[in-house]
Length: 311
Length: 264
Ligand SMILES: Nc1ncnc2c1ncn2[C@@H]1O[C@H](COP(=O)(O)OP(=O)(O)OP(=O)(O)O)[C@@H](O)[C@H]1O
Ligand SMILES: [Mg+2]
Image 1: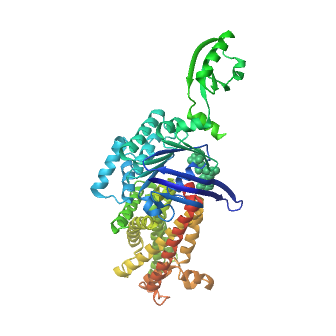
Image 2: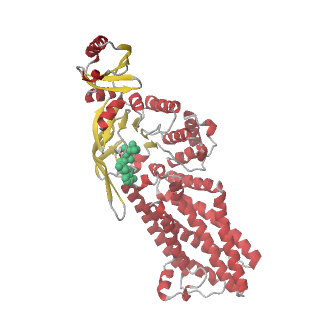
Image 3: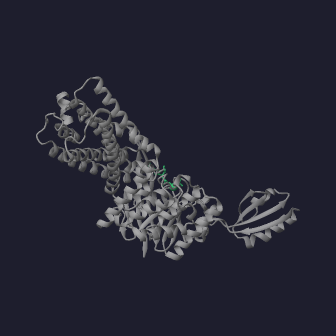
């Protein structure tokens, strides 16, 4: 059962009255998302992530392509679809003098909640998003992290089946970001909500997403689990060495070594097969009289996949 | 969509605008300052020019009508302006809300606010210049206010449409263009004094007819045969037109990405 089924979506922005400018934001994007999945959309700035999410959420109409979300056509059946989805964007904003509870209640009414049902839903969301102490605080007085949590509470007010999160942890400090991530994981686990998120934090994508779609210049370049992407890009494994003397010029040319970089006093050599190359490297270094102070072997990080694909 | 949901969405917007209005002291300033200045300066001017009681009533009706329309249309324009200013337009249109809920909800608040302004100005006019708004009777007064509210609705929705069409930089332009129309309505003079070419435009403004009907009770002969019916028909026509324009502007904003751009 698919939550999202998008085919060959194209979108070009036209702007300027005198000097017409055209930006091809999406150039034929196809994406399917299964119900209950968490899918991450990654890509460099201006890749088209927000544009794609906005089309799926009915905020933007596509120029071309067929898009079905939760069984509704996003253009023809936008009204019915809007009741079933919701979205959080990285820089949330609501009316400045409304209080936290009033904001959630306002959106609740738009989805047909009233009276006791509305009060109960607002209470539950304020508790879920740990906003109780700020319930009566005007929105403009809140910190970035709290605003983000208000946005999350608002986005759950209609008990959506599908949730779009556009950079949900943008500008949050690490422990709040971790809490937001925990919320997201729980929403999927406990309520089975399908989630599509964009992020610039690779750890976030690695930790949360079942699958990742990599988008660049309006096209999806790769798609798969984080492990699949790492294998697909064939980045090899990283052997990190702490040496004395710290620089050994011939390392980059040793057999099986793809590249060597220096990071914070470590020499990181990417090799095709660590199990085979590590003993060879150690022997050669020893023979050269280099003292080996520390050695680590690890898989490449998603970040490196990102850098490779974004090239 | 059920009736209950329709009313609930309108109520949500009404409550939102009322809360925003109640919490902003500058809104109150905006609400009261210019109307009071208007009535005082027009009243004093009519005293200085030694106008008859009827003539003074004529211009005071005009200035009060202008204030009522202005306060009410501003609130109707808040239907989108609040979201434009707070950059929450995209959250708004992500929800299942129609422009009818936004404009109706804001209009209700606008009517309450401009009614308050009207009562205050009427009291001020009575106390300072002996001007009696109730002289024409309750029904005539109610019709006159309805005419002001309808005009305000049209103007406010037109401003919303222009802003969603051209973006928030067009705010000043939007207001200037619609206020142009109001000036034509013969606020301070009968439209018979206008040159023919401009009088044609004035005849297209619904407020002209409501002013005309109300002033007839102060001894000024009506310039039209059925002013109230004409005013209502014109208002209905423009209301439909403005609603359609706003709807089309929102559709266009979804297509061009302006809806997203105004939320950044
Ligand atoms: N409303 C708009 N009007 C005009 N151009 C737009 C609009 N929104 C996006 N664009 C352009 O479309 C392209 C894709 O933008 P988009 O916001 O989708 O990128 P993104 O992947 O979300 O980037 P980021 O990581 O910076 O958020 C960019 O070149 C951008 O300038
Ligand atoms: Mg973006």
